[in-house]
Image (cartoon, rainbow, N blue to C red; front, side, top):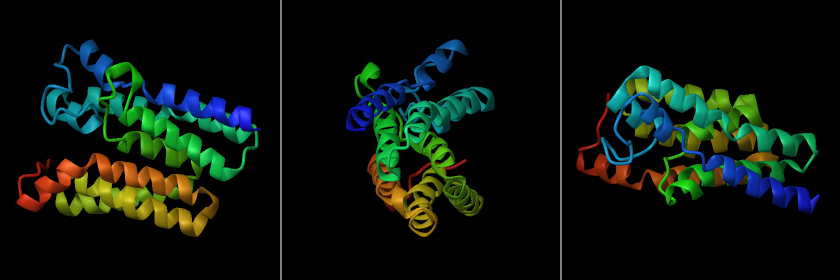
Length: 193
Protein backbone atom coordinates (compact mmCIF):
# COMPACT_ATOMS: atom_id res chain seq x y z
CA UNK A 1 0.00 0.00 0.00
CA UNK A 2 2.74 2.47 0.93
CA UNK A 3 4.67 1.76 -2.29
CA UNK A 4 1.51 2.34 -4.33
CA UNK A 5 0.83 5.53 -2.41
CA UNK A 6 4.37 6.85 -3.01
CA UNK A 7 4.18 5.97 -6.70
CA UNK A 8 0.85 7.73 -7.08
CA UNK A 9 2.15 10.83 -5.30
CA UNK A 10 4.98 11.04 -7.84
CA UNK A 11 2.68 10.31 -10.79
CA UNK A 12 0.19 12.92 -9.61
CA UNK A 13 2.89 15.56 -9.28
CA UNK A 14 4.28 14.77 -12.75
CA UNK A 15 0.84 14.85 -14.38
CA UNK A 16 0.00 18.02 -12.51
CA UNK A 17 3.17 19.58 -13.89
CA UNK A 18 1.75 19.49 -17.41
CA UNK A 19 0.85 23.17 -17.81
CA UNK A 20 -1.78 23.14 -20.54
CA UNK A 21 -2.02 26.93 -20.96
CA UNK A 22 1.42 27.10 -22.57
CA UNK A 23 0.90 24.58 -25.43
CA UNK A 24 -2.70 25.76 -25.96
CA UNK A 25 -1.53 29.35 -26.34
CA UNK A 26 1.13 28.20 -28.80
CA UNK A 27 -1.50 26.25 -30.74
CA UNK A 28 -3.66 29.37 -31.07
CA UNK A 29 -0.70 31.63 -31.90
CA UNK A 30 -1.06 33.54 -28.65
CA UNK A 31 1.78 34.93 -26.54
CA UNK A 32 3.21 32.94 -23.66
CA UNK A 33 0.75 33.47 -20.78
CA UNK A 34 3.66 33.62 -18.33
CA UNK A 35 4.82 36.88 -19.91
CA UNK A 36 1.49 38.49 -20.85
CA UNK A 37 -1.49 39.82 -18.92
CA UNK A 38 -1.25 38.71 -15.30
CA UNK A 39 1.73 36.44 -16.16
CA UNK A 40 -0.23 33.49 -14.82
CA UNK A 41 -0.53 30.37 -17.03
CA UNK A 42 -4.14 29.68 -16.11
CA UNK A 43 -7.56 29.81 -17.73
CA UNK A 44 -8.40 33.33 -16.50
CA UNK A 45 -5.28 34.86 -18.04
CA UNK A 46 -5.73 32.82 -21.24
CA UNK A 47 -9.26 34.26 -21.43
CA UNK A 48 -7.85 37.78 -21.19
CA UNK A 49 -5.27 37.28 -23.92
CA UNK A 50 -7.01 34.80 -26.22
CA UNK A 51 -10.74 34.58 -25.63
CA UNK A 52 -13.22 31.90 -24.67
CA UNK A 53 -12.14 28.85 -26.68
CA UNK A 54 -8.47 28.66 -25.60
CA UNK A 55 -9.53 29.54 -22.04
CA UNK A 56 -12.13 26.74 -21.99
CA UNK A 57 -9.62 24.24 -23.35
CA UNK A 58 -7.09 25.33 -20.74
CA UNK A 59 -9.65 25.00 -17.96
CA UNK A 60 -10.74 21.52 -19.06
CA UNK A 61 -7.19 20.23 -19.53
CA UNK A 62 -6.09 21.62 -16.16
CA UNK A 63 -9.23 20.34 -14.44
CA UNK A 64 -8.97 16.74 -15.53
CA UNK A 65 -5.22 16.08 -15.61
CA UNK A 66 -5.35 15.08 -11.93
CA UNK A 67 -8.08 12.48 -12.48
CA UNK A 68 -5.96 9.42 -13.45
CA UNK A 69 -3.82 9.20 -10.28
CA UNK A 70 -6.79 10.01 -8.03
CA UNK A 71 -8.95 7.36 -9.70
CA UNK A 72 -6.07 4.89 -9.46
CA UNK A 73 -5.76 5.61 -5.72
CA UNK A 74 -9.49 5.00 -5.32
CA UNK A 75 -9.32 1.81 -7.37
CA UNK A 76 -6.49 0.55 -5.14
CA UNK A 77 -8.76 1.35 -2.17
CA UNK A 78 -6.24 3.57 -0.45
CA UNK A 79 -7.51 5.36 2.63
CA UNK A 80 -9.47 8.51 1.63
CA UNK A 81 -6.94 10.73 3.41
CA UNK A 82 -4.22 9.20 1.22
CA UNK A 83 -6.38 9.75 -1.87
CA UNK A 84 -6.75 13.41 -0.89
CA UNK A 85 -2.96 13.72 -0.55
CA UNK A 86 -2.53 12.26 -4.04
CA UNK A 87 -4.91 15.01 -5.19
CA UNK A 88 -2.80 17.60 -3.37
CA UNK A 89 0.35 16.30 -5.13
CA UNK A 90 -1.37 16.91 -8.48
CA UNK A 91 -2.22 20.51 -7.70
CA UNK A 92 1.27 21.03 -6.27
CA UNK A 93 2.59 19.96 -9.67
CA UNK A 94 0.30 22.43 -11.40
CA UNK A 95 1.41 25.31 -9.18
CA UNK A 96 5.12 24.37 -9.22
CA UNK A 97 5.54 22.37 -12.47
CA UNK A 98 8.72 20.41 -12.96
CA UNK A 99 8.64 20.93 -16.75
CA UNK A 100 8.25 24.72 -16.69
CA UNK A 101 10.88 25.85 -14.17
CA UNK A 102 8.38 25.59 -11.29
CA UNK A 103 6.40 28.58 -12.66
CA UNK A 104 2.81 27.39 -12.85
CA UNK A 105 -0.75 28.53 -12.42
CA UNK A 106 -2.81 29.27 -9.34
CA UNK A 107 -4.48 25.89 -9.23
CA UNK A 108 -8.16 26.81 -9.38
CA UNK A 109 -9.15 24.80 -12.47
CA UNK A 110 -7.15 21.82 -11.24
CA UNK A 111 -8.77 22.16 -7.81
CA UNK A 112 -12.25 22.08 -9.36
CA UNK A 113 -11.38 18.93 -11.30
CA UNK A 114 -9.98 17.35 -8.15
CA UNK A 115 -13.14 18.12 -6.17
CA UNK A 116 -15.31 16.59 -8.87
CA UNK A 117 -13.31 13.36 -8.79
CA UNK A 118 -13.03 13.22 -4.99
CA UNK A 119 -16.70 13.90 -4.18
CA UNK A 120 -19.22 15.62 -6.44
CA UNK A 121 -20.80 17.38 -3.45
CA UNK A 122 -17.57 19.28 -2.81
CA UNK A 123 -17.48 20.31 -6.46
CA UNK A 124 -21.08 21.55 -6.30
CA UNK A 125 -20.46 23.51 -3.08
CA UNK A 126 -17.35 25.17 -4.50
CA UNK A 127 -19.03 25.78 -7.86
CA UNK A 128 -22.07 27.45 -6.35
CA UNK A 129 -19.82 29.57 -4.14
CA UNK A 130 -17.69 30.62 -7.13
CA UNK A 131 -20.72 31.53 -9.25
CA UNK A 132 -22.43 33.48 -6.46
CA UNK A 133 -19.34 35.49 -5.52
CA UNK A 134 -18.38 36.15 -9.15
CA UNK A 135 -21.93 37.32 -9.95
CA UNK A 136 -21.63 39.93 -7.22
CA UNK A 137 -17.97 41.00 -7.55
CA UNK A 138 -17.08 40.16 -11.20
CA UNK A 139 -13.59 39.33 -9.84
CA UNK A 140 -12.35 35.81 -10.54
CA UNK A 141 -9.73 35.81 -7.78
CA UNK A 142 -12.28 36.67 -5.08
CA UNK A 143 -14.64 33.96 -6.32
CA UNK A 144 -11.80 31.44 -6.46
CA UNK A 145 -10.64 32.22 -2.93
CA UNK A 146 -14.14 31.90 -1.50
CA UNK A 147 -14.71 28.63 -3.34
CA UNK A 148 -11.43 26.92 -2.49
CA UNK A 149 -10.44 28.42 0.84
CA UNK A 150 -13.88 28.44 2.48
CA UNK A 151 -16.59 26.50 0.61
CA UNK A 152 -14.63 23.38 -0.34
CA UNK A 153 -13.06 22.71 3.09
CA UNK A 154 -16.37 23.41 4.85
CA UNK A 155 -18.22 21.05 2.51
CA UNK A 156 -15.50 18.45 3.04
CA UNK A 157 -15.80 18.76 6.81
CA UNK A 158 -19.53 18.19 6.55
CA UNK A 159 -19.82 15.61 3.74
CA UNK A 160 -16.43 13.86 3.56
CA UNK A 161 -14.33 14.47 6.70
CA UNK A 162 -11.73 11.90 5.64
CA UNK A 163 -10.87 14.16 2.71
CA UNK A 164 -10.63 17.28 4.87
CA UNK A 165 -6.83 17.26 5.19
CA UNK A 166 -6.13 17.19 1.47
CA UNK A 167 -8.94 19.60 0.60
CA UNK A 168 -7.72 22.06 3.25
CA UNK A 169 -4.15 21.84 1.94
CA UNK A 170 -5.45 22.56 -1.55
CA UNK A 171 -7.28 25.60 -0.18
CA UNK A 172 -4.15 26.85 1.57
CA UNK A 173 -2.10 26.42 -1.62
CA UNK A 174 -4.69 28.35 -3.64
CA UNK A 175 -4.63 31.07 -0.97
CA UNK A 176 -0.81 31.25 -1.12
CA UNK A 177 -0.83 31.48 -4.92
CA UNK A 178 -3.33 34.36 -4.76
CA UNK A 179 -1.24 36.47 -2.39
CA UNK A 180 -0.57 39.12 -5.07
CA UNK A 181 -4.27 39.22 -5.93
CA UNK A 182 -5.04 39.78 -2.25
CA UNK A 183 -2.55 42.67 -2.16
CA UNK A 184 -4.14 44.12 -5.31
CA UNK A 185 -7.60 43.81 -3.75
CA UNK A 186 -6.46 45.63 -0.64
CA UNK A 187 -5.11 48.57 -2.63
CA UNK A 188 -8.02 48.49 -5.10
CA UNK A 189 -6.24 47.57 -8.33
CA UNK A 190 -7.35 43.95 -8.82
CA UNK A 191 -8.71 43.40 -12.31
CA UNK A 192 -12.19 42.02 -12.90
CA UNK A 193 -14.18 41.08 -15.98
